[in-house]
Structure formats: C-alpha cells, structure tokens
Image 1: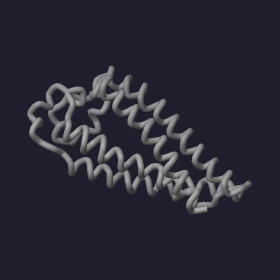
Image 2: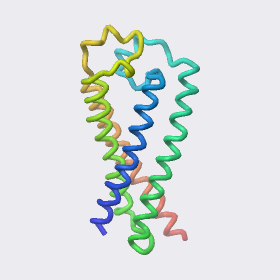
Image 3: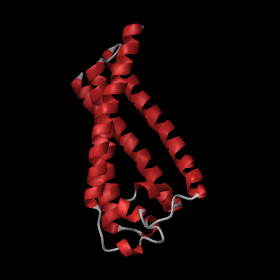
Image 4: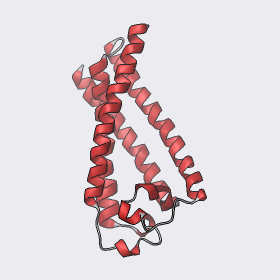
Amino acid sequence: MWPIVVTNGLLFGGLITAWMLVAIFGSLRWNPEIWVNDYPPEIRAVLPPKSARARRQSLWVSVPSALVLVGLIAGLVIRLNEASGGFAGFLPIAAGLWIALQLFNLVDLVIVDWLIIETVRPSWTLLPGTEPFAGQRFYRFHFNAFLKGFVGITVASLVIAGALAVVDWLL
C-alpha cells in the first residue's frame, strides 16, 4: 500500500502545485495587491490596507482555488480508498495528504517565494510603495511561513484522516 500512497501523494501534489502556481502567478499578474497581506511585515507597515477592489479580486482567486483544492484532496482520498478496496486507513490517508500538500508547500517556498519573488523580482510582483525595499531580501520570512505551513499541513492531514476514519467507523 505504501508505494501507492507515495505515488498518489506525489501525483495529486503535482496537480495541486500546478493549479496553485497558475492561481498565484495569474493573480500576481492581475493585481499583486491581492497578496499584500502575505508580504513581510516591514513592507506591510508602509503600504495602505488592501483596497476594496483587491479584496473582491481575492475572492475571485481564493474561492475557485479552495474548491479545486478540496476536489483534488477528495480525488486523492478516493484513489487511495479504491486502491485498498475499502477505507485505506488513517495512516495511509494522512500520509498521502501530507505528501501532496507538503509538495506544494516546498515548491511555493523554493520556486515562488525564494526564486521568483525574492531573487528574480519581476516588476509585476511589486507594489507601488515597496521601492525602498528593492535591495532587501526576505528569505527568512518566507522560510518561517514555510515552517508554519509545514505544521499546519501536518495537523490538517491528521485531522482530515481522523475525521474520515471516524466516518468510516460510524458507517
């Protein structure tokens, strides 16, 4: 079962990552202000609060992203259950979810945050008012966000797998 868990975790992690990269880069191109709350605190301190327009646009990005994410997570669980001929079990589901979501977390850190946002810094990722920070890099800030995601994903994977185990037990 474990090779199936790892393979499907990586497969669905790749799908989640591909979808999220499209959503992240597309929304950054559309309006980087959508992501203002994810900027380092030093930058947020000099920027105005997110505009009403950017808040509306955030919904146009976050709602479809969340729906696709839930669908892909459900697809992973269904795939694992089909491979096991019933409920795959708490640990296989938790591990599959953890692998899939941590893959995105890692790609987000290395490719999106460190490579594109901090190293390459294309003009379409910069908000007016951030010019004083042009020479600064915030690699540690992004690494700390990765660590928070690592913990959050670990907890979420365990909670989702636990909830599914309870549902399976009740049925």
